Structures are given as structure tokens and as C-alpha cells.
Length: 518
Image 1 (cartoon, rainbow, N blue to C red):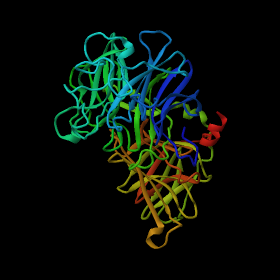
Image 2: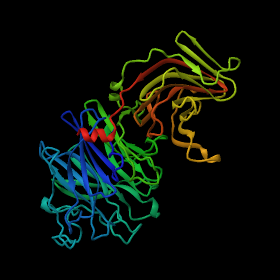
Image 3: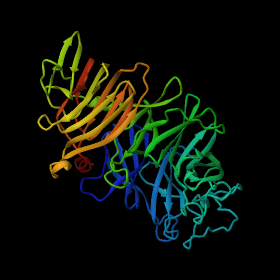
Image 4: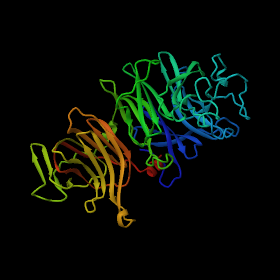
């Protein structure tokens, strides 16, 4: 868990994480100024310490003298023990309307040096050429090939076309079968203006020398495909991108680079609010990271880096995200008193029965929650649920036992729909405005056993996560409620609950304490 301290006017933006020699290295933008790329480190992927900033905006007249945008750090394939950071920059001379990609290098991941560029103080390249020197096919001096920018053959390249704003950002370096590819968020130069977003492709033909190719993928749907990633899992290629239209992270797949990219019926990896996903590897496999933004209309306020999710491939080829296993290591024993009692006792119509490890929760008419005896703050709750009847069920947590304010998680076990809501009382208002009802996130799943699901709910500080049958369906950040009652609810149905596991978790340090400790 990582964020700027409370009260700061700053917030983190797009992230990139690299695991090396037992340490997770986080590089991230700092919004709203975009004036440097920050660096933090962690041993567990949950608690972070800020270290020296990595890269700063350039001096006046430089190609990156206005802002720095998304970056990607990877090992230098040509120099063992060296690292490269491709990053996005914009210049004051262009009014920030034209994006370019530059390079910084490091020998230790802490001290970074920008590569020399073919750029003068008046914004012209040092060596006149019919195309920008970084993109022509003839070999060039690697000290003069940056920044990289698009040409008109395949892409929008001039401020006067399309949206009057050139997309060429969010680099991602991928190496496969001896070939190096630099991907970025670009736009084709034809078709409906708000459907031109694509994953642009450049090939590294010599160290630091790139030639431009046609787009790796153009979905023909989106304004931009932001923060692209390309990975290979079990001989299958997966292309991952963040989509601004619905603030979700999606993916496509192909058996070979150059063949068409295909989409599964369900290609959403992380739901609304999770953005700018980045992939990294650690000893246990692949991880997907992103920042979470609580305000869909603004992505530069109160963002947070939640725990990552483990990325796995199913036998049928789909990608799925699972709980980061190191959250389990924060457990503080098991709760042994698992008996629940109804909030609204009604012995004639509602019941709570225990039989051989199975709990039967029944509610005939209105909403009826059954709560464990002790309040919970940070916790892990697991159980197998089976719905009997045609009514409703779900989970309530951090519930005020007097006002019933808290989080309400509805579970449609038949259709495979989960929705978490902040449902409570707005004490600052009167009349009908006193009712607070905010849908925080929705998620979907498919089950071969309708009405039955193994659920896992994690509340870890302000991070909330729901898994169904070991697949993360909801993941979000919200701090409306910190502690309260926990249990299951039914409405006109009977819910069978089996194999309950309830573990309190050690909460993460607050942001200000964590930054002070660093």
C-alpha cells in the first residue's frame, strides 16, 4: 500500500515495478506536476520506502522540459548489470501537444543518466533528415537517436491532425527470440477520430536504434490503448492495455507476433478504478500492478498503489488475477468463535442453524444480516456459499451495529454478479439527502455451478478485495468505514455456509507513518 501523505497536493500516477535481487522497485509519476519520476523500494510488495527520485524534467529548451509521463524499466539486453528506462516527455515548445519517448540508463537502479539526444534548444534535430533520425532504417550513432517520435506512414504524427494532440507515450520494452520491441500508445492516421487508438511498435535493430513498424494492434474501438504490456505465457502472447473509456484494464491474445490478436468473451483483468496496469515477474510468477483512483472523473487526486495481484493463465488460455499471497502472511491467527446471530431477531421466520460444520441462514421476508460476535477491521473471510430459494444474499462488513452504516456486498450467485456499496447515513444533510448510497464497484464471473461459490473477502486497511473461486472479481480502495460488524445477509432465501475461515490481519501502516519511517 503506497500513497502520498494526507494533506499533500500531490498524488501518484502511472507506475512501473521491477523485481531485482529480493527488492521490488517502484517507479511512478507524481501528479499533477509531472516534474519527476519517483522511486520507492519494498521487500514484500506491501510496504514501501521512498528513495532518491530517478529522473527529472529537462532544462528549458530540452525535449522533455515540460512534463514526464509513463516509463518502463527493464534490463539492458546489450550490457549485463545495466538497466534502461524508456520514458515519455513533452516540451514547452510544443505546448505539451506532442509526446516523445526518451531513454535513461543506470547501473544500480538508483542513479539514472539521460541518454544524449538529437535535439537542439530550438527544438530541431541536429542532423537534418527526411524523417526523424530515430526512425529511419539506416544505422545511426546511438547518442543521437532520441527522442523517438512517430512518422506519418502509419500514425498520427502532426498536431494538426486527428485530435490536434499527438499520442506517443507509455513505452514498454519486450524482447523475444533475439528481437527487441518497443511498444507505446499511439494512434493510426485514418478512421473515426475517437477510434484510432492503437499499440504502436518499434523494433530495436541495433543498440539504441529503432525502426518504426505498423501498429502491433489496432482494436478499432478506443481513443487510446494506454500503458501497453506484452508478455508470453506458455507459448501464448498476451497484450494488455488500459482503456480510458471505462477505466478498466483489458487484454488480447495471439499464438504468434504478426498473427491477428483475439479477444475472449471476458477480457477484463481489473475492474473500474484500477488503471495503468504494469506487469512484472518475481520468483513466484507474474504480478499485475496498477494505481487505483477513487474519482473516475479525475485521475490526479488521492490515488493509491494497492497490493498487486498474481497473474495466472487458465488451462483454456484465459488470464486471471488472484490474491497476492503475501497478504495472507499478515494474518494474526484464526477466529475460533464463528457463531453468528441475527441483527433483527425473528424466531418465527428467520433462523441460524449449525449442523456438522454447515451453517444455515434463513430469512423469509426483509433484509436480515447475521453477524459474528466481534467487530473486525482488517480481515480475511473465506467460505463456500450455496443459495437455496429465489431470494438474495451477500456480505456486510465494517457495519455500525446501531445505524447499519457500512459496506454492503451483494452476491448474485445465479448470474455471477458482485456489487459493493457504501450504504449509510449522511449526517451533514437533512431530509432525503441523509441517505447515502454509492456503488463502488461491480464485477462478474462465470460458474459451472450456478448458486454455489467459494468466496474470499479481504479488507486490508482501505484496500478491499473479493475473490470468487480463487479469481479476483472486485478490488478497490475506499476508507469510508474502518471497522465494524461482519457477516452474511439473506433476503427471502436460505444461505448454506460451509468451511468458514476468519483471520484478523495486521493493517498496513498509514501513508504518513510509512513515509516518515523511510
